[in-house]
Image (cartoon, rainbow, N blue to C red; front, side):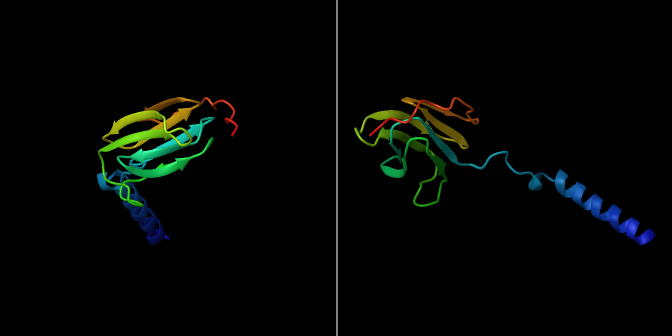
Length: 125
């Protein structure tokens, strides 16, 4: 019985040490660009001259450096209207994570998640 108790204490101590170790800590959010369209027209998300995503109304996703041809930071980020080619947003991204949100025709970028509003109804056409 005593050996089980000692084993349990040893395991618990190991878990506590691992949790306290700096190498065991994880970032709160992964180093990615999160994008979210809320009631916005169809857009193209570009990094430099590379199209990384076609974004529909009420669509969203994640862009990760090094995946699917996405270059490393810094990024010259652009959001362009798919139908008319109009520049909706432009920003230099030097650190991640970031949240790019397009609510209707109003874009914003933030280093923290963006809650609400839901956005207008999707445009027709």
